[in-house]
Image 1: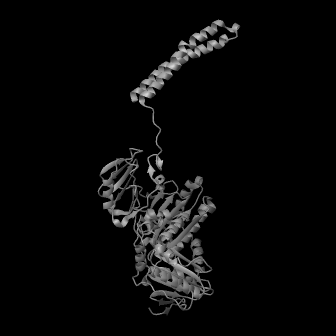
Image 2: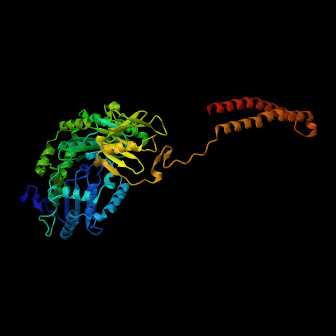
Length: 578
């Protein structure tokens, strides 16, 4: 590629076959090396492989004064460094050397680090929406744990690095006029991989699902455009005004626009609320969108966000600050606008344009609500069960006969009152296999069925063998043995305690019969005469006063009269049940 410089002062060239962007900026040098590979390129059974390669590539760069980092996003992986020219050269050379020859002796250690890292990370409010929208493939993988780590081998990560971390699949940017001397970014030769096509788990939109967030989250996928970016800012202003300032429902109410790939972007709206205000929040949130969809968008709001967008170009050394975004666009295959073109597009956006985007956002909306449906707003419930179940042998649950599994040659279904979930083996994204016999299956649509032999009657090894033979090997992950306390039991997690031996039926009858004769009969045969004698002796002998004796006699007779029939009936009922 020839070296060229555009009207904004950004130079395009190549370094060791890698497309490279240069632009001057004062201070220390900053550089970024991007690869067009991320979580969305993986499968659920190999998820985590890109992140693992990134960690292995950075292993030799320990903590120090040099500021550097690596990150794995949905559609790309980014290595970045800030320092002197020598620092940048050492860092980038080291990353590329490691990618050429990954330190796979660190494989298991880095896997543990990734698991620990995941356990300590928080998730954004919109993370669940990716799973509901895309299922267990493409961009939906960002909603899952990196479940492939248990399966990945040294050969797997080496092959991934050799085919995805290549010169043709990379873009380099540097905040300088020239490439620093000494760079050696030699990488395997390969091909540029476009961002993966998006999958879908939604039969229709707009839709909603119930989530655990404290508020409402809306996501929508729309074409990348300047007007969509401005709409997200107008949306944020309207949500803040109505939900926080006017209604007092929320502390946070925002709108956001983020490119997903070369052609599409995700618009996100979020508002939180206390539990007692969540119903009011849902209604007010829907009302904001109804207003925008009706075209009631103030010109003043458009003018405000337009001015803010244009002000971003009024900054010193603009070309150097534009480099990261330009590099991502080049990597994804999206056209970069010059500053003049970008300003012209911002200036041309009208209220009518925003109105059109508002309708498009609502038409593709997926709304997460905190425990309350929004059917009245015209949103359909996102599917929570499968349209059909498989045939095959029925296995009732040990703890509840109304819950059962069906194991067939082509799939497995779990059926319970009000819900049925099916995973077809041909459409299985992941099957985790445990040595104790458990099989956890995840379908392309994100539905999960767990086959736990401890929880269901009569699941045989032969039936498990049918599942193992039918699920594609590429979807299988062999899991390590589980501690006995982690194996679910009908009475709850872990092994069920041994039940205390119950008395035999005959023993129960004997005990109640004994109770009958000890309390009932003596109460009449012995207690009665004794109390009559006490009455005859009276108060003169300082024994039981006559009034008290009369009351005791009355209660003893009543107790005997009622106790004997009750004991006889109870004794017969126990004998009848057993």
